[in-house]
Amino acid sequence: MLKIQNQRRIFLPAFIKPLEEKNQIGSKKQFAKPKLDLLQPLRQWLDKIEILNPKLAKFIAKLIPAQCPFERDIMLFGRKIGHIPPMCKLNPLYNELVYLRFRALCYLVDKCGEDIQSYC
Image (cartoon, rainbow, N blue to C red; front, side, top):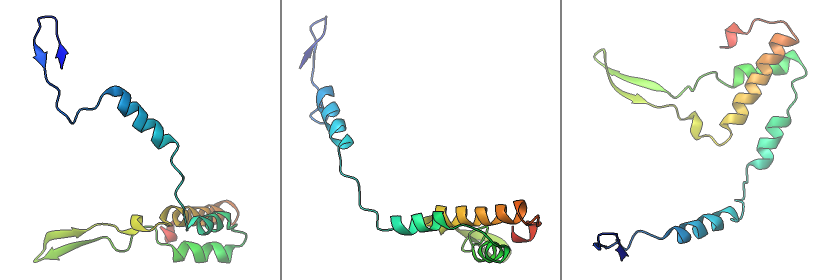
């Protein structure tokens, strides 16, 4: 119970924790063990792939789509009744694959001088 200047008593609910306990809980989270990432070697391998020839760059640019191919609008009698969201971001290697495609497109533009509009 807390006393205020005009002597009214305030009852704090049991679910409110004092500030000291919150700080102790937060400090424990700082020293938590890192999680085991089984895909880390594959992520590193994808990041280390060097694009050194135009054939490889074109293959990668065609293989990895620019947009998620699963996103769709469900139409019935000309009216949109539903939407299937893009599920590519559920892929744990999504960022690495997009970056690999970006590097391939940059290689085609910078080193080969190609127009990449057909890949977009």
